[in-house]
Length: 346
Image: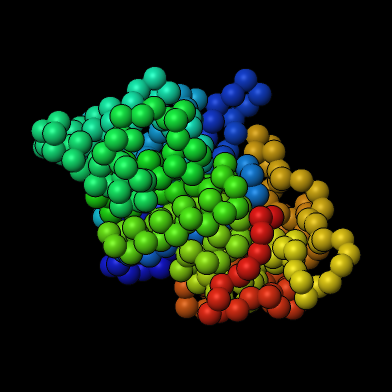
């Protein structure tokens, strides 16, 4: 579902990532293609287990030992990351592509001070003295709103709140001036008010540093307010891609529609929330053809063959045999293109 153009910072082409387990081979990513443009924020959404985090780890080549990208290309600024040596990949990781983890506590070493963890990373990638690295670390901590950063840099992770730890990770990531930021559920471990603050910081820093961003989340409200385009994942594949506002206003894949219908809405009134029947497929033995077909209301015999990505409009692609049959109900009454989508977590 990539478009042909020169403005892509990341172009993931038909990648297959497999995990070898005692129970069999888990086909976590099965021909995933998508792209991210320069200075663009792209959302990757879907249920747990659909391949969102595996995609980020495949890009950065930080998969567990039993995992491997067995086919495809991951082009970053035109260079295939899968062709790089481990040493070459280490220079890309952090300096070119930064990763914000889901849990800030597990991403920080509990027995090392913030100063050690900040300046070690900075000095690894930049030709700076220890004093210069510390000054840069303090400057970045100030930038993300940590008070008395020149003193607090000597504290340890447990002395910070969850929101402040996430700010530390943002400061550490952006100190290296990367071109692409991968944020993997960056607010999941935080309460709602802190989530908003962290997202505001990420948005501001992204604009100041002209960063491209890949935002991985299951929270459609976060995606609506913080991305330009969306790639919807299901069962290790991309089922729909398009501009954020268009996906919310005019979704075409039955899974995308089902996701949006499950959002609580003031205008829908009281009653049971819509749910998607069935469960996420087991990727050791996934369904043949379209992986959503066992849960889909529009299933036919044709769905047992893998659907190609069909272009609906400019930049809008859908992998479904029955695009013309799918009924798009008035599911987005709360959506305001100027205000974003005021909704809570799924």
